[in-house]
Length: 286
Image (cartoon, rainbow, N blue to C red; front, side):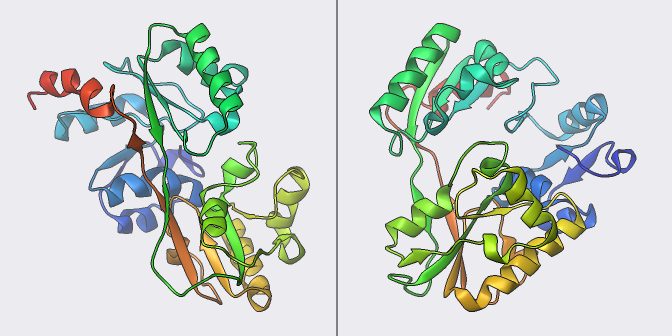
């Protein structure tokens, strides 16, 4: 989703991480584009959907439309896959366009089964069956990993999570907190006493946010505010845990060691993404 001067974002192409800097992408844009680029994909984005689709079709056999959490496909997909988060049970029927996507889905990916409790899973399964009984359901875990680094057992850490997940996403924690707890940290330091300007405003607007730092970055100034918050927290922590989809170390300087958290999809048997994608790949001659 583009932010900023939309006239400059009519049709953008990202094939390398340097392209993110070239187009002056916000943190929120980077979180959508960077994982695909890191996996070897080419990303098209912008506001002229017809031009984007025309350009993407010129160099791809299969197009993956990634709508994030707040959009509907701008073309008719051959296969509509919707990821469902049981840690936010009920959101699939109470949010727009989440409910519309759920009703239109061909396939659900019921993720984070390893993190959700029985009541959450039962709620989501019942809702999906009621909203869209024809869709296939892929069940999967989302194992979290912490990159190698110095031992953080019993130390003070500050956790930085994906911003929208903590704010309008309604979560109090993300993968960073999960990894920190699994690593046996001594304490998770509350960032609010160190928050400045727009970051402090974010905590005021979303008071239910837990004691973690949302990686807000909708503008250059907000990125600077985030960096200043991290700098001020430096003397009070021993390490930082980065749970965002991007490597924040490329954008801001950390005064203490900072380690990234990763997470991947681990399907539980069949159906799987491999099996449901086979007809699409055959259409593409793959």
